[in-house]
Image (cartoon, rainbow, N blue to C red; front, top):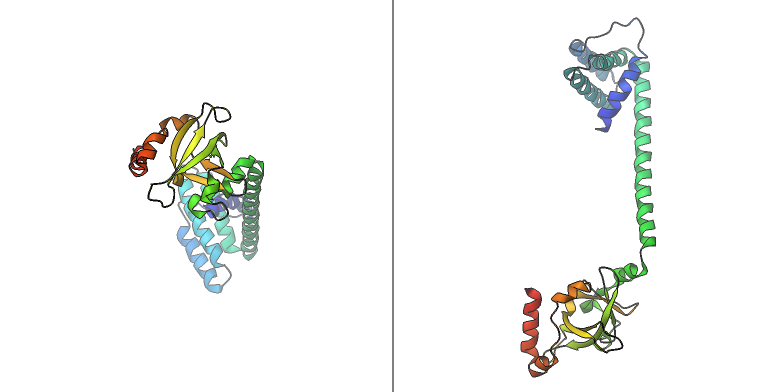
Length: 251
């Protein structure tokens, strides 16, 4: 597409350099003669492969312009191709212009890429601190510095908006031991008074060891779908209770 654009824009300009006495070629005529001329100079080695490709693109553009009714533009391209077929100097000027255009496009592409990279870097610099902390957070199973016991002391923040939505009040596991799979989130209230406790799966949480903060992909409103913690049922039969909690989250 770049070459087609270049051909369509450069060819009429090159046509202006053709001798004033040159006979204008009708867009429907002269293709066979031009092909013969270009085949001859290609055999002589005075036309590069890239220029041959560009000239084929120019021919297609000229045909499309002719079909669309732009006869003058089509004839301008044909005239430019005839001038380049006849004159080595015209071919040299075209090659130089083509290389300059390629270099300019490469510079623009590099500048665009650099600008995009800079914009991404600026956006990262402007991110709230909690987003940078969230980016460092890991799944609980990948933690190395924080023990399971220490998880019960963490503040819990939303990974959606960074808001503080409570803290971990305890970890839950079946009575036969094993790694905890759920935790109790104490939400709302003040200094432990009036809190509502919800049961959340540990695998939906990420923890930043640097800030000692747990992040969950929930907001205050989304907590409404979380099951509230029933301490009595958990004490009665933790394994059965946690299976029911698991069913609630899978629904």
